[in-house]
Image (cartoon, rainbow over all chains, first blue to last red):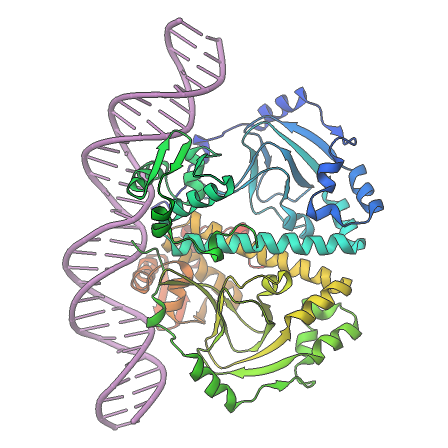
Length: 262
Length: 262
DNA sequence: TTTAAATTTTGATCTGGATCAACTGTTCTG
DNA sequence: CAGAACAGTTGATCCAGATCAAAATTTAAA
Protein backbone atom coordinates (compact mmCIF):
# COMPACT_ATOMS: atom_id res chain seq x y z
CA UNK A 1 0.00 0.00 0.00
CA UNK A 2 2.44 2.64 1.13
CA UNK A 3 4.92 3.64 -1.50
CA UNK A 4 8.57 3.21 -1.31
CA UNK A 5 11.07 4.84 1.06
CA UNK A 6 8.51 6.42 3.27
CA UNK A 7 8.42 6.89 7.02
CA UNK A 8 5.67 8.05 9.25
CA UNK A 9 6.71 11.48 10.47
CA UNK A 10 6.42 10.54 14.12
CA UNK A 11 9.02 7.80 14.13
CA UNK A 12 11.93 9.96 13.07
CA UNK A 13 13.43 13.31 13.93
CA UNK A 14 10.44 14.40 15.88
CA UNK A 15 11.46 17.64 17.52
CA UNK A 16 8.79 19.98 18.75
CA UNK A 17 8.81 23.68 18.00
CA UNK A 18 9.34 24.30 21.67
CA UNK A 19 12.47 22.23 21.80
CA UNK A 20 13.74 24.18 18.86
CA UNK A 21 13.07 27.51 20.44
CA UNK A 22 14.69 26.48 23.67
CA UNK A 23 17.86 25.39 22.01
CA UNK A 24 18.06 28.32 19.66
CA UNK A 25 18.24 30.65 22.59
CA UNK A 26 21.53 29.10 23.57
CA UNK A 27 23.06 30.68 20.50
CA UNK A 28 21.42 33.99 19.86
CA UNK A 29 20.24 35.10 16.47
CA UNK A 30 22.37 37.99 15.38
CA UNK A 31 22.75 40.47 12.64
CA UNK A 32 25.45 39.33 10.34
CA UNK A 33 28.82 40.91 10.83
CA UNK A 34 31.57 40.55 8.26
CA UNK A 35 32.20 37.03 9.49
CA UNK A 36 30.42 35.20 6.66
CA UNK A 37 30.30 37.88 4.03
CA UNK A 38 33.07 36.35 2.01
CA UNK A 39 31.66 32.86 2.02
CA UNK A 40 28.33 34.17 0.79
CA UNK A 41 29.88 36.53 -1.71
CA UNK A 42 31.89 33.66 -3.18
CA UNK A 43 28.78 31.75 -4.12
CA UNK A 44 28.11 31.94 -7.86
CA UNK A 45 24.68 33.28 -7.00
CA UNK A 46 26.11 36.43 -5.41
CA UNK A 47 29.56 36.85 -6.89
CA UNK A 48 28.58 39.02 -9.86
CA UNK A 49 26.07 41.36 -8.31
CA UNK A 50 26.62 45.06 -7.67
CA UNK A 51 28.59 45.70 -4.48
CA UNK A 52 25.97 48.16 -3.29
CA UNK A 53 23.21 45.62 -3.77
CA UNK A 54 25.19 42.92 -2.06
CA UNK A 55 25.72 45.24 0.86
CA UNK A 56 22.02 46.00 1.03
CA UNK A 57 21.27 42.29 1.07
CA UNK A 58 23.82 41.68 3.81
CA UNK A 59 22.48 44.49 5.95
CA UNK A 60 19.22 42.63 6.40
CA UNK A 61 20.88 39.24 6.86
CA UNK A 62 20.96 37.12 9.96
CA UNK A 63 23.23 34.30 10.98
CA UNK A 64 21.85 31.63 13.18
CA UNK A 65 23.23 28.47 14.72
CA UNK A 66 20.88 25.56 14.92
CA UNK A 67 21.24 22.33 16.86
CA UNK A 68 20.63 19.03 15.07
CA UNK A 69 17.15 17.94 14.04
CA UNK A 70 15.51 21.31 14.09
CA UNK A 71 12.79 21.92 11.53
CA UNK A 72 13.83 25.12 9.79
CA UNK A 73 10.93 25.45 7.41
CA UNK A 74 7.67 23.61 6.86
CA UNK A 75 6.12 22.87 3.52
CA UNK A 76 3.08 24.99 2.76
CA UNK A 77 4.38 28.03 4.57
CA UNK A 78 5.29 31.22 2.77
CA UNK A 79 9.01 31.95 2.41
CA UNK A 80 10.26 34.57 4.84
CA UNK A 81 13.93 33.95 4.15
CA UNK A 82 16.29 32.62 1.58
CA UNK A 83 18.51 30.19 3.47
CA UNK A 84 22.23 29.64 3.00
CA UNK A 85 23.99 26.75 4.70
CA UNK A 86 27.39 27.94 5.96
CA UNK A 87 28.20 24.79 7.90
CA UNK A 88 26.42 21.60 8.85
CA UNK A 89 23.84 19.71 6.78
CA UNK A 90 20.20 20.28 5.95
CA UNK A 91 17.70 17.69 4.81
CA UNK A 92 14.90 18.66 2.44
CA UNK A 93 11.89 16.39 2.79
CA UNK A 94 8.19 16.28 2.07
CA UNK A 95 5.13 14.67 3.60
CA UNK A 96 1.73 13.61 2.43
CA UNK A 97 -0.98 11.65 4.11
CA UNK A 98 1.21 10.56 7.02
CA UNK A 99 4.10 9.49 4.80
CA UNK A 100 7.42 11.23 4.49
CA UNK A 101 10.30 11.15 2.04
CA UNK A 102 13.71 12.73 1.78
CA UNK A 103 14.20 14.74 -1.41
CA UNK A 104 17.67 16.25 -1.10
CA UNK A 105 20.53 17.09 1.19
CA UNK A 106 22.00 20.58 1.26
CA UNK A 107 25.65 20.96 2.19
CA UNK A 108 27.85 24.04 2.63
CA UNK A 109 28.07 26.41 1.01
CA UNK A 110 24.79 26.63 -0.84
CA UNK A 111 21.31 28.06 -0.77
CA UNK A 112 17.97 26.37 -0.66
CA UNK A 113 14.34 27.17 -1.53
CA UNK A 114 15.36 29.82 -4.01
CA UNK A 115 12.40 29.14 -6.32
CA UNK A 116 9.81 29.61 -3.57
CA UNK A 117 11.52 32.80 -2.42
CA UNK A 118 11.59 34.33 -5.87
CA UNK A 119 8.03 33.40 -6.76
CA UNK A 120 6.80 34.16 -3.23
CA UNK A 121 4.97 30.87 -3.40
CA UNK A 122 4.55 28.29 -0.61
CA UNK A 123 7.45 25.97 0.17
CA UNK A 124 7.04 22.59 -1.49
CA UNK A 125 9.51 20.96 0.89
CA UNK A 126 10.30 21.12 4.57
CA UNK A 127 13.85 21.49 5.85
CA UNK A 128 15.55 20.25 8.97
CA UNK A 129 19.11 20.34 10.22
CA UNK A 130 20.81 16.98 10.45
CA UNK A 131 23.68 18.22 12.57
CA UNK A 132 24.65 21.45 14.25
CA UNK A 133 24.41 23.98 11.43
CA UNK A 134 25.09 27.59 10.77
CA UNK A 135 22.57 29.21 8.46
CA UNK A 136 22.45 32.66 6.92
CA UNK A 137 18.94 34.02 6.49
CA UNK A 138 18.19 36.64 3.85
CA UNK A 139 14.74 38.20 4.09
CA UNK A 140 12.77 37.13 1.02
CA UNK A 141 11.51 40.62 0.36
CA UNK A 142 15.05 41.92 0.16
CA UNK A 143 16.01 39.14 -2.21
CA UNK A 144 13.07 39.89 -4.48
CA UNK A 145 13.68 43.64 -4.34
CA UNK A 146 17.29 43.24 -5.36
CA UNK A 147 16.38 40.64 -7.94
CA UNK A 148 14.21 43.35 -9.49
CA UNK A 149 16.99 45.87 -9.80
CA UNK A 150 20.25 43.92 -10.08
CA UNK A 151 20.57 42.37 -13.51
CA UNK A 152 23.67 40.32 -12.75
CA UNK A 153 21.87 38.84 -9.78
CA UNK A 154 18.85 38.01 -11.92
CA UNK A 155 21.12 36.18 -14.38
CA UNK A 156 22.88 34.30 -11.60
CA UNK A 157 19.49 33.15 -10.39
CA UNK A 158 18.72 31.84 -13.87
CA UNK A 159 21.89 29.82 -13.75
CA UNK A 160 21.16 28.46 -10.29
CA UNK A 161 17.56 27.55 -11.12
CA UNK A 162 18.55 25.81 -14.34
CA UNK A 163 20.99 23.73 -12.35
CA UNK A 164 18.35 22.85 -9.75
CA UNK A 165 15.79 22.04 -12.40
CA UNK A 166 18.15 19.74 -14.21
CA UNK A 167 19.12 18.03 -10.96
CA UNK A 168 15.48 17.24 -10.21
CA UNK A 169 14.91 15.94 -13.73
CA UNK A 170 17.90 13.64 -13.35
CA UNK A 171 16.53 12.43 -10.06
CA UNK A 172 13.17 11.68 -11.68
CA UNK A 173 14.87 9.67 -14.39
CA UNK A 174 16.81 7.77 -11.74
CA UNK A 175 13.56 6.95 -9.94
CA UNK A 176 11.52 5.98 -12.96
CA UNK A 177 14.10 4.16 -15.05
CA UNK A 178 16.06 2.21 -12.44
CA UNK A 179 15.42 -0.43 -9.83
CA UNK A 180 16.42 0.29 -6.27
CA UNK A 181 19.53 -1.87 -6.60
CA UNK A 182 20.60 0.09 -9.66
CA UNK A 183 19.94 3.36 -7.88
CA UNK A 184 22.11 2.32 -4.98
CA UNK A 185 24.91 1.12 -7.24
CA UNK A 186 24.93 4.42 -9.12
CA UNK A 187 24.73 6.39 -5.90
CA UNK A 188 27.83 4.62 -4.60
CA UNK A 189 29.68 5.27 -7.84
CA UNK A 190 28.79 8.96 -7.63
CA UNK A 191 29.99 9.19 -4.05
CA UNK A 192 33.17 7.38 -4.93
CA UNK A 193 33.80 9.80 -7.77
CA UNK A 194 33.09 12.75 -5.52
CA UNK A 195 35.57 11.43 -2.97
CA UNK A 196 38.08 10.64 -5.69
CA UNK A 197 38.81 7.27 -4.10
CA UNK A 198 37.34 3.79 -4.06
CA UNK A 199 37.03 4.01 -0.31
CA UNK A 200 34.77 6.52 1.39
CA UNK A 201 32.25 7.04 4.16
CA UNK A 202 28.54 7.49 3.68
CA UNK A 203 27.76 11.04 4.64
CA UNK A 204 24.27 10.35 5.93
CA UNK A 205 22.44 7.77 7.98
CA UNK A 206 21.45 4.68 6.06
CA UNK A 207 17.89 5.30 7.12
CA UNK A 208 17.81 8.59 5.29
CA UNK A 209 19.79 7.29 2.36
CA UNK A 210 17.08 4.68 1.99
CA UNK A 211 14.37 7.33 1.97
CA UNK A 212 16.35 9.43 -0.48
CA UNK A 213 16.77 6.48 -2.83
CA UNK A 214 13.10 5.61 -2.51
CA UNK A 215 13.30 2.42 -0.50
CA UNK A 216 12.90 1.15 3.05
CA UNK A 217 15.85 0.81 5.46
CA UNK A 218 15.38 -2.97 5.49
CA UNK A 219 15.63 -3.06 1.77
CA UNK A 220 18.68 -0.85 1.65
CA UNK A 221 20.38 -3.27 4.00
CA UNK A 222 19.57 -6.12 1.64
CA UNK A 223 20.56 -4.05 -1.36
CA UNK A 224 24.05 -3.57 0.09
CA UNK A 225 24.24 -7.35 0.34
CA UNK A 226 23.03 -7.58 -3.20
CA UNK A 227 25.97 -5.49 -4.38
CA UNK A 228 28.57 -7.73 -2.73
CA UNK A 229 28.88 -9.85 -5.89
CA UNK A 230 29.87 -6.65 -7.69
CA UNK A 231 32.69 -5.97 -5.27
CA UNK A 232 31.07 -3.63 -2.78
CA UNK A 233 32.29 -3.95 0.80
CA UNK A 234 30.25 -2.36 3.57
CA UNK A 235 31.29 -1.94 7.16
CA UNK A 236 29.14 0.53 9.04
CA UNK A 237 29.44 3.84 7.20
CA UNK A 238 32.57 2.73 5.48
CA UNK A 239 32.28 1.68 1.85
CA UNK A 240 34.91 0.07 -0.32
CA UNK A 241 34.36 -0.49 -4.00
CA UNK A 242 36.77 -3.31 -4.67
CA UNK A 243 35.95 -3.76 -8.35
CA UNK A 244 34.85 -0.43 -9.79
CA UNK A 245 34.58 -1.83 -13.33
CA UNK A 246 32.38 -4.69 -12.21
CA UNK A 247 30.10 -2.36 -10.29
CA UNK A 248 30.06 0.07 -13.19
CA UNK A 249 29.16 -2.75 -15.53
CA UNK A 250 26.09 -3.42 -13.45
CA UNK A 251 25.17 0.19 -12.65
CA UNK A 252 25.61 1.56 -16.17
CA UNK A 253 25.99 5.17 -15.01
CA UNK A 254 24.97 7.82 -17.51
CA UNK A 255 26.06 11.46 -17.57
CA UNK A 256 22.45 12.34 -18.32
CA UNK A 257 21.40 10.99 -14.93
CA UNK A 258 24.48 10.82 -12.77
CA UNK A 259 26.61 13.84 -13.61
CA UNK A 260 25.82 16.16 -10.77
CA UNK A 261 27.27 19.17 -12.50
CA UNK A 262 26.18 20.32 -16.00
CA UNK B 1 13.56 -6.21 -12.41
CA UNK B 2 12.54 -3.42 -14.73
CA UNK B 3 11.10 -0.41 -12.97
CA UNK B 4 7.66 0.89 -13.35
CA UNK B 5 6.04 2.46 -16.41
CA UNK B 6 8.79 1.63 -18.80
CA UNK B 7 8.76 0.53 -22.41
CA UNK B 8 11.48 -0.67 -24.63
CA UNK B 9 12.10 2.09 -27.14
CA UNK B 10 11.62 -0.12 -30.14
CA UNK B 11 8.04 -1.14 -29.52
CA UNK B 12 6.58 2.34 -29.68
CA UNK B 13 6.75 5.38 -31.91
CA UNK B 14 9.66 4.08 -33.84
CA UNK B 15 10.17 6.54 -36.62
CA UNK B 16 13.48 6.75 -38.35
CA UNK B 17 15.23 10.00 -39.05
CA UNK B 18 14.74 9.34 -42.74
CA UNK B 19 10.99 9.08 -42.40
CA UNK B 20 11.05 12.36 -40.57
CA UNK B 21 13.03 14.12 -43.20
CA UNK B 22 10.84 12.80 -46.00
CA UNK B 23 7.68 14.02 -44.35
CA UNK B 24 9.10 17.35 -43.34
CA UNK B 25 9.72 18.16 -46.92
CA UNK B 26 6.02 18.05 -47.55
CA UNK B 27 5.67 21.18 -45.45
CA UNK B 28 8.75 23.26 -45.91
CA UNK B 29 10.63 24.88 -43.10
CA UNK B 30 10.24 28.58 -43.45
CA UNK B 31 11.39 31.79 -41.93
CA UNK B 32 8.71 33.01 -39.65
CA UNK B 33 6.44 35.67 -41.03
CA UNK B 34 4.14 37.68 -38.80
CA UNK B 35 1.81 34.70 -38.61
CA UNK B 36 2.79 33.47 -35.17
CA UNK B 37 4.44 36.57 -33.80
CA UNK B 38 1.51 37.46 -31.63
CA UNK B 39 1.11 34.00 -30.14
CA UNK B 40 4.77 33.95 -29.18
CA UNK B 41 4.76 37.53 -27.94
CA UNK B 42 1.79 36.77 -25.68
CA UNK B 43 3.73 34.13 -23.78
CA UNK B 44 4.78 35.41 -20.36
CA UNK B 45 8.33 34.52 -21.31
CA UNK B 46 8.40 37.08 -24.14
CA UNK B 47 5.73 39.62 -23.28
CA UNK B 48 7.90 42.03 -21.29
CA UNK B 49 11.04 42.09 -23.37
CA UNK B 50 12.24 45.06 -25.42
CA UNK B 51 10.47 45.25 -28.80
CA UNK B 52 13.81 45.53 -30.58
CA UNK B 53 15.08 42.40 -28.89
CA UNK B 54 11.92 40.52 -29.61
CA UNK B 55 12.24 41.50 -33.25
CA UNK B 56 15.81 40.29 -33.31
CA UNK B 57 14.73 36.98 -31.85
CA UNK B 58 11.94 36.63 -34.40
CA UNK B 59 14.23 37.41 -37.31
CA UNK B 60 16.15 34.22 -36.65
CA UNK B 61 13.06 32.14 -35.96
CA UNK B 62 11.68 29.29 -38.00
CA UNK B 63 8.26 27.71 -38.06
CA UNK B 64 8.00 24.10 -38.92
CA UNK B 65 5.15 21.64 -39.26
CA UNK B 66 5.81 18.14 -38.08
CA UNK B 67 3.79 15.00 -38.67
CA UNK B 68 2.95 12.79 -35.68
CA UNK B 69 5.58 10.71 -33.94
CA UNK B 70 8.61 12.57 -35.12
CA UNK B 71 11.52 12.75 -32.76
CA UNK B 72 12.32 16.45 -32.48
CA UNK B 73 15.24 16.25 -30.13
CA UNK B 74 17.28 13.47 -28.59
CA UNK B 75 18.65 13.44 -25.08
CA UNK B 76 22.37 13.99 -24.90
CA UNK B 77 22.49 16.31 -27.86
CA UNK B 78 23.38 19.97 -27.55
CA UNK B 79 20.50 22.42 -27.85
CA UNK B 80 20.38 24.17 -31.22
CA UNK B 81 16.96 25.69 -30.71
CA UNK B 82 14.52 26.73 -28.09
CA UNK B 83 11.23 25.14 -29.12
CA UNK B 84 7.76 26.62 -28.86
CA UNK B 85 4.69 24.50 -29.47
CA UNK B 86 2.13 26.54 -31.42
CA UNK B 87 -0.24 23.69 -32.08
CA UNK B 88 -0.28 19.96 -31.53
CA UNK B 89 1.29 18.04 -28.65
CA UNK B 90 4.83 17.10 -27.74
CA UNK B 91 5.92 14.29 -25.45
CA UNK B 92 9.07 14.65 -23.38
CA UNK B 93 10.61 11.31 -22.50
CA UNK B 94 13.86 9.74 -21.44
CA UNK B 95 15.62 6.42 -21.91
CA UNK B 96 18.20 4.42 -20.06
CA UNK B 97 19.45 0.92 -20.56
CA UNK B 98 16.74 -0.02 -23.04
CA UNK B 99 13.94 1.36 -20.89
CA UNK B 100 11.91 4.45 -21.62
CA UNK B 101 9.59 6.68 -19.64
CA UNK B 102 7.37 9.66 -20.36
CA UNK B 103 8.23 12.69 -18.26
CA UNK B 104 5.87 15.41 -19.46
CA UNK B 105 3.52 16.55 -22.18
CA UNK B 106 3.87 19.98 -23.74
CA UNK B 107 0.76 21.66 -25.11
CA UNK B 108 0.24 24.98 -26.93
CA UNK B 109 1.32 27.58 -26.39
CA UNK B 110 4.48 26.90 -24.42
CA UNK B 111 8.20 26.39 -24.69
CA UNK B 112 10.32 23.43 -23.81
CA UNK B 113 13.95 22.68 -22.95
CA UNK B 114 14.57 26.23 -21.77
CA UNK B 115 17.08 25.18 -19.11
CA UNK B 116 19.30 23.27 -21.53
CA UNK B 117 19.18 26.16 -24.00
CA UNK B 118 20.20 28.75 -21.43
CA UNK B 119 22.97 26.66 -19.91
CA UNK B 120 24.04 25.35 -23.30
CA UNK B 121 24.11 21.91 -21.69
CA UNK B 122 22.99 18.60 -23.22
CA UNK B 123 19.28 17.82 -23.34
CA UNK B 124 18.21 15.58 -20.48
CA UNK B 125 15.05 14.55 -22.30
CA UNK B 126 14.05 13.61 -25.80
CA UNK B 127 10.98 15.09 -27.47
CA UNK B 128 8.57 13.70 -30.03
CA UNK B 129 5.39 14.98 -31.57
CA UNK B 130 2.28 13.03 -30.66
CA UNK B 131 0.15 14.55 -33.35
CA UNK B 132 0.65 16.93 -36.24
CA UNK B 133 2.33 19.90 -34.60
CA UNK B 134 3.51 23.36 -35.46
CA UNK B 135 6.71 24.33 -33.73
CA UNK B 136 8.60 27.62 -33.64
CA UNK B 137 12.35 27.22 -33.42
CA UNK B 138 14.50 29.95 -31.93
CA UNK B 139 18.25 29.47 -32.39
CA UNK B 140 19.77 28.86 -28.96
CA UNK B 141 22.59 31.30 -29.57
CA UNK B 142 20.12 34.09 -30.25
CA UNK B 143 18.20 33.24 -27.10
CA UNK B 144 21.36 33.32 -25.01
CA UNK B 145 22.57 36.53 -26.64
CA UNK B 146 19.34 38.31 -25.91
CA UNK B 147 19.15 36.82 -22.44
CA UNK B 148 22.49 38.54 -21.85
CA UNK B 149 21.27 41.96 -22.84
CA UNK B 150 17.53 42.05 -22.15
CA UNK B 151 16.85 42.30 -18.44
CA UNK B 152 13.11 41.84 -18.66
CA UNK B 153 13.69 38.66 -20.64
CA UNK B 154 16.17 37.40 -18.03
CA UNK B 155 13.57 37.97 -15.31
CA UNK B 156 10.86 36.26 -17.31
CA UNK B 157 13.17 33.27 -17.63
CA UNK B 158 13.58 33.18 -13.86
CA UNK B 159 9.84 33.04 -13.51
CA UNK B 160 9.48 30.29 -16.08
CA UNK B 161 12.30 28.19 -14.62
CA UNK B 162 10.93 28.52 -11.10
CA UNK B 163 7.63 27.25 -12.38
CA UNK B 164 9.26 24.31 -14.16
CA UNK B 165 11.39 23.48 -11.16
CA UNK B 166 8.43 23.46 -8.83
CA UNK B 167 6.45 21.32 -11.26
CA UNK B 168 9.18 18.67 -11.27
CA UNK B 169 9.44 18.73 -7.50
CA UNK B 170 5.69 18.18 -7.26
CA UNK B 171 5.97 15.30 -9.67
CA UNK B 172 8.71 13.74 -7.56
CA UNK B 173 6.56 13.99 -4.46
CA UNK B 174 3.70 12.40 -6.37
CA UNK B 175 5.96 9.51 -7.37
CA UNK B 176 7.59 8.94 -4.00
CA UNK B 177 4.69 9.52 -1.67
CA UNK B 178 1.78 7.92 -3.50
CA UNK B 179 0.79 4.52 -4.79
CA UNK B 180 -0.09 4.18 -8.44
CA UNK B 181 -3.80 4.08 -7.62
CA UNK B 182 -3.49 7.34 -5.69
CA UNK B 183 -1.53 8.92 -8.51
CA UNK B 184 -4.21 8.00 -11.02
CA UNK B 185 -6.99 9.26 -8.75
CA UNK B 186 -5.25 12.60 -8.31
CA UNK B 187 -4.46 12.81 -12.00
CA UNK B 188 -8.15 12.39 -12.84
CA UNK B 189 -9.14 15.04 -10.31
CA UNK B 190 -6.62 17.46 -11.83
CA UNK B 191 -7.91 16.80 -15.32
CA UNK B 192 -11.47 17.23 -14.15
CA UNK B 193 -10.58 20.53 -12.54
CA UNK B 194 -8.78 21.65 -15.67
CA UNK B 195 -11.83 20.81 -17.76
CA UNK B 196 -14.13 22.44 -15.24
CA UNK B 197 -16.51 19.51 -15.46
CA UNK B 198 -16.91 16.04 -14.01
CA UNK B 199 -16.89 14.63 -17.51
CA UNK B 200 -13.91 14.88 -19.78
CA UNK B 201 -11.73 13.02 -22.26
CA UNK B 202 -8.23 11.80 -21.60
CA UNK B 203 -5.95 13.85 -23.79
CA UNK B 204 -3.37 11.14 -24.35
CA UNK B 205 -3.21 7.43 -25.03
CA UNK B 206 -3.60 5.25 -21.98
CA UNK B 207 -0.29 3.66 -22.82
CA UNK B 208 1.50 6.94 -22.41
CA UNK B 209 -0.55 7.98 -19.42
CA UNK B 210 0.62 4.78 -17.77
CA UNK B 211 4.23 5.61 -18.52
CA UNK B 212 3.75 9.16 -17.28
CA UNK B 213 2.23 7.94 -14.03
CA UNK B 214 5.00 5.38 -13.61
CA UNK B 215 3.08 2.17 -14.23
CA UNK B 216 2.48 -0.42 -16.92
CA UNK B 217 -0.49 -0.22 -19.30
CA UNK B 218 -1.88 -3.42 -17.79
CA UNK B 219 -1.78 -1.92 -14.38
CA UNK B 220 -3.38 1.32 -15.48
CA UNK B 221 -6.24 -0.70 -16.88
CA UNK B 222 -6.68 -2.39 -13.52
CA UNK B 223 -6.26 0.87 -11.68
CA UNK B 224 -9.22 2.33 -13.57
CA UNK B 225 -11.22 -0.65 -12.37
CA UNK B 226 -9.91 -0.05 -8.90
CA UNK B 227 -11.37 3.46 -8.93
CA UNK B 228 -14.88 2.30 -9.87
CA UNK B 229 -15.85 1.98 -6.19
CA UNK B 230 -15.01 5.68 -5.87
CA UNK B 231 -17.38 6.64 -8.65
CA UNK B 232 -15.08 6.74 -11.67
CA UNK B 233 -16.65 5.68 -14.94
CA UNK B 234 -14.40 4.89 -17.88
CA UNK B 235 -15.46 4.33 -21.46
CA UNK B 236 -12.60 4.53 -23.92
CA UNK B 237 -11.09 7.97 -23.53
CA UNK B 238 -14.19 9.26 -21.84
CA UNK B 239 -14.07 9.69 -18.08
CA UNK B 240 -16.92 10.54 -15.74
CA UNK B 241 -16.35 11.25 -12.10
CA UNK B 242 -19.74 10.44 -10.65
CA UNK B 243 -18.86 11.11 -7.01
CA UNK B 244 -16.16 13.76 -6.89
CA UNK B 245 -16.23 13.92 -3.07
CA UNK B 246 -15.81 10.17 -2.75
CA UNK B 247 -12.89 10.17 -5.16
CA UNK B 248 -11.40 13.19 -3.45
CA UNK B 249 -11.74 11.44 -0.10
CA UNK B 250 -9.60 8.65 -1.45
CA UNK B 251 -7.14 10.74 -3.47
CA UNK B 252 -6.54 13.39 -0.82
CA UNK B 253 -5.24 15.96 -3.31
CA UNK B 254 -2.84 18.54 -1.92
CA UNK B 255 -2.06 21.94 -3.39
CA UNK B 256 1.61 21.22 -2.66
CA UNK B 257 1.52 18.34 -5.14
CA UNK B 258 -1.47 18.85 -7.39
CA UNK B 259 -1.82 22.58 -7.98
CA UNK B 260 -0.31 22.94 -11.39
CA UNK B 261 0.00 26.69 -11.12
CA UNK B 262 1.82 28.42 -8.23
C1' DT C 1 -14.66 -2.63 -46.61
C1' DT C 2 -11.32 -5.86 -45.29
C1' DT C 3 -6.99 -6.76 -43.52
C1' DA C 4 -3.54 -5.61 -40.85
C1' DA C 5 -1.47 -3.47 -36.89
C1' DA C 6 -1.66 -1.46 -32.62
C1' DT C 7 -3.97 -0.43 -28.28
C1' DT C 8 -6.51 -1.99 -24.52
C1' DT C 9 -8.29 -5.39 -21.54
C1' DT C 10 -8.35 -9.69 -18.93
C1' DG C 11 -6.38 -13.60 -16.68
C1' DA C 12 -2.56 -16.17 -14.52
C1' DT C 13 1.72 -16.01 -12.47
C1' DC C 14 5.84 -14.12 -10.57
C1' DT C 15 8.82 -10.99 -8.03
C1' DG C 16 10.72 -6.73 -6.04
C1' DG C 17 10.21 -4.63 -2.37
C1' DA C 18 7.04 -3.43 1.74
C1' DT C 19 5.64 -4.86 6.22
C1' DC C 20 6.00 -7.09 10.62
C1' DA C 21 8.70 -8.99 14.19
C1' DA C 22 12.68 -10.10 16.59
C1' DC C 23 17.37 -9.35 17.59
C1' DT C 24 22.01 -6.84 17.74
C1' DG C 25 24.78 -3.11 18.20
C1' DT C 26 25.37 1.94 19.26
C1' DT C 27 24.78 6.19 21.44
C1' DC C 28 22.59 9.07 24.45
C1' DT C 29 21.22 10.06 29.14
C1' DG C 30 20.18 10.06 33.94
C1' DC D 1 27.66 2.74 34.56
C1' DA D 2 23.03 0.97 33.67
C1' DG D 3 19.21 1.43 31.16
C1' DA D 4 16.67 3.40 27.50
C1' DA D 5 16.23 4.91 22.81
C1' DC D 6 17.35 4.27 18.46
C1' DA D 7 19.92 2.67 14.09
C1' DG D 8 20.85 -1.25 11.68
C1' DT D 9 20.33 -6.11 10.39
C1' DT D 10 17.99 -10.51 9.56
C1' DG D 11 14.18 -13.54 8.81
C1' DA D 12 9.34 -14.54 7.55
C1' DT D 13 5.43 -13.13 5.23
C1' DC D 14 2.64 -10.40 2.29
C1' DC D 15 1.24 -7.47 -1.43
C1' DA D 16 1.52 -4.03 -5.21
C1' DG D 17 2.60 -4.10 -9.32
C1' DA D 18 5.56 -6.33 -13.18
C1' DT D 19 5.59 -9.88 -16.60
C1' DC D 20 3.72 -13.19 -19.79
C1' DA D 21 0.05 -14.77 -22.65
C1' DA D 22 -4.00 -14.20 -25.11
C1' DA D 23 -8.47 -12.27 -26.23
C1' DA D 24 -11.09 -8.07 -27.33
C1' DT D 25 -11.16 -3.49 -29.26
C1' DT D 26 -9.82 0.23 -31.72
C1' DT D 27 -7.25 2.48 -35.37
C1' DA D 28 -4.92 2.63 -39.63
C1' DA D 29 -3.98 1.16 -44.07
C1' DA D 30 -4.75 -1.24 -48.46
